[in-house]
Length: 291
Image 1: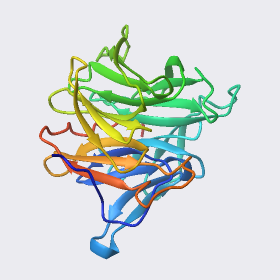
Image 2: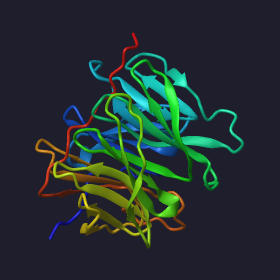
Image 3: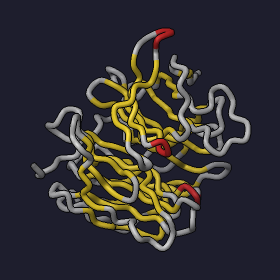
């Protein structure tokens, strides 16, 4: 039986998401506090060390290829570049001036080096969110709208299939992706989730989709044909992000959240892990032509 256990540090995240295995270490974000974090230390001295901190919400990051310690980030109302010892460089803020107050949410890079990130209304206004794509030249394009709370996306090994959750609607859709320019084809419904909301996602080496299920205290694995294959239970209500990492990429890591809970328990906001049989895919990096 697969068991998820908390990592051994006392820190608890308000809204832990965007978890990734990058350059031999785990990173994640605490969205509402604007922090990019990594576990540091062992035993009683273990803690979460801050790699970067913004004064706006930080939804997700991806590493920048060829630039150790640099990240592209979905943050505030747009997309920025973060680097060691440098100021935040904003590429675009497409959600500035929206009819309702907006923030960026989850995101990732695809295997072809593009960065994708969703946006949502702070108050969850139905259909106010969008999906944005960032090209190697730093251009930011709105490619989908009418989403309420976008989570993911997640890509297959070839980068020709994208999974995207609309969490508020309990829906995961699957899109064909043109590898040449990132154009999206006609989507199909992949999974509809009752009793919770699909949140952060990742695809493993067999092409199966793992998703955290917010509100259901579960992580689920779906086979490429949409069949539910595995359900892992957690002792907390709000799992939010997932990734497959470790030296052999066979460790499932799960972030959770305390936000919105009237009486958070001692493990709400912890990061959990479990061993799984099928490894994950390497974390893709953003490939930029910017200097």
